[in-house]
Length: 122
Image (tube, rainbow, N blue to C red; front, side, top):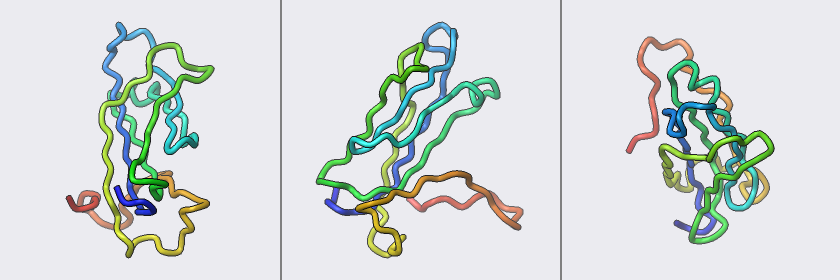
């Protein structure tokens, strides 16, 4: 990690009934000590899908922490299926002050094209 570097963090959750399929969990995810979002896998699980969350943040140090935490809605253990982190470099999102803000994906769509959605190159 590069202190102050911009990173795309993507978390993926696929609830496969690890606890006997009682109820898909709901819990919080925290990045660098700040609540990022509440993970609710209920609807995606009912449709046989994974839940995805993305955020772009600047690293506060040479490390970047992502934590899962119980909240008042948590009835089973929090889990994570995949954690991906991509360094974005200095040429992307230069107008955002990452010392005060982060960018969170609300939706991803492909407007006007018939091809698949293009992702960040590996």
